[in-house]
Image (cartoon, rainbow, N blue to C red):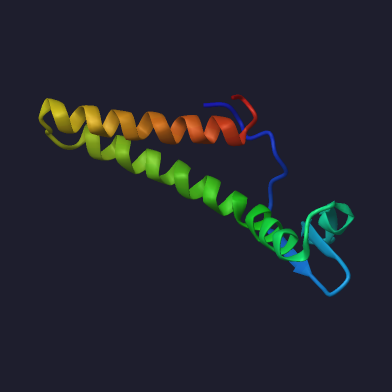
Length: 103
């Protein structure tokens, strides 16, 4: 698996009446200013929260892949169950690759 190619760290959605920013890091450095876009305020807020949640979601999916692989290694499944696990792992790995900009 490739290394992540996106800004690491804990992100926070900062939403006020006149601007909607997503920031990261202890210094509060700005990632993006969604207020400059052409989309409405409700969608800006939703996008900011989604962007802020992305690193946690990425790590959660990565943890699920690890757990699925460990379960497969330490359990005995029939062929159908094994195929289901492998398909699930593959889908999650493709999702992470997409998040890294590889697909």
